[in-house]
Length: 165
Image: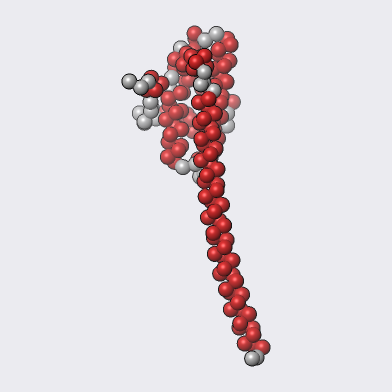
């Protein structure tokens, strides 16, 4: 066997090693993508559960509903609590919008968030709160929320829709 034959065998073995490495990397990328998708789903669920947990008690629910429908009837303490609920909601929306704009949250999930934006901020109290507090959030999120609110004819629901009759 000549030296050139050994060189050809070495090139062949090297090419096989490159192909095997590429297959291995493709498998690892796929696993990483699946793991990232699961993490995004977990974050999405945590954001929604965290928000809904803020008004799981009867007192909190009364404050939230009064704040959304007739904010003038809130006491000073209730107004602060209502504001805290709304901040938590908008921060969750802000994270979701950031994920959506980077392509890590699906359009379907963002569409669900838009329904919630219209439901909460489309109320008298929610609208008043948003107008007075939108400056406290990122410009891109504020613009996205404002755009959602301009499309009132799209799918939405009323707070009263939560009643099961």
